[in-house]
Image (cartoon, rainbow, N blue to C red; front, side, top):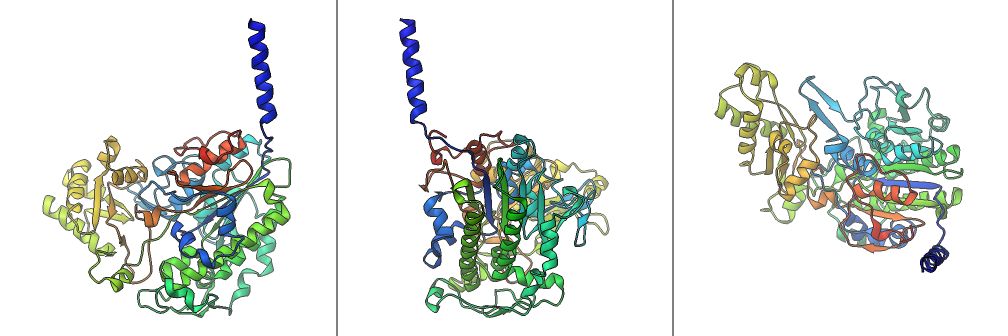
Length: 546
């Protein structure tokens, strides 16, 4: 009897194996991050996209149309850190682009590294020193015995560094008119970066003009071409055509990156890296991370309802199509897993909303006015701060840091003052919620908004009071341009699209997030999950046998 049962089990196992398709481990993983790409742009501008960019990925990949960040501060650094660590700032430590260290009494840039020096360019050294946990790419390096390569390229330093993780083969970013790196990643620049810098490609666009390409009819979806709440910076002007000039390398860099030519430059360097490093062509899996910052530069300058944003969305579609074609020619998309996502969306310009409905509840929160209101609230509660000092030392995005020297002189408890300040801020008309650090540390039961704030909170780096602005409000001292950083869907809802072998194409409306990308890639490749991961494997889009 037992022999019969055993034989049947063996037969069933053999039949199951026979029915199982054979999956080859992909040789190449490409993660494309478009800085400031709300999912809405894929839908709103769809009719003007070609067939080989966004549409191609949506048609041939698993398109998670209901994917959002579940943290509160939707900024560049936190978003890029989430994508490859699979966890939020409460674990990975990247709470914002910068924060304040009250113990050391100094501001901290998210990728600053005092122990590193720059390779080409100038300025302070940078690395992933402040990233607390390893990434998917780090696990890939360990899994392959450091034979598999991880190359991360971006226009912004924080984007390249945080996508690249702790142990990449190369992390490269732009600094003025050069692509650079730091000594953290090696003694010298990769040869393909040095050759690219020497080619003069970056400076070759000086004197060119960014002109309209879309027909007049397309702009029924957009605002007027020249409105006072658009910014006019670095000689670009507020209306088409936009000249690419710049009085110095820094302003030229900004003008270049605020035009389609910035996309061209990045694509050219990326393909140099693919060819020189033989990515995807070796008997091991390689990872390439690319972050396009141009849409973010354009979005900040002209706003999400501008003609410039519509044009740059179309140009980004073309750039991605060109990059996918180049990868197909060089490596083969059949051997490649492609991921498309974004680090954040964007908040509508409040003056644009008010031009449509004057009484709409929207606005910019002045840093100086807000700090004055906070200091006045604490002065009313505890008296004036000592001479030449203020109760609040810093306001950085959603984080307020109290002055430790003032508390010491006044002999006041940090927890008490923080709670009084939070209670006062909760009465401000522009604030949705303020929480003292002590409540976030206590891990109490939170509302959905407070839970997002908890995910953006790190016990060593976040402020003594953490706050969230009301919808359509943002901290912004400028009278023009757009911002992001809010916990609402217009800043949080972004594309998450995966395409490649082992992934079932289709549109998925299940709850998802960029935090799920790293765990899903780990499952696809059969490697260890990132150590800090909080996201889930998007199993509904994976072939069952995988």
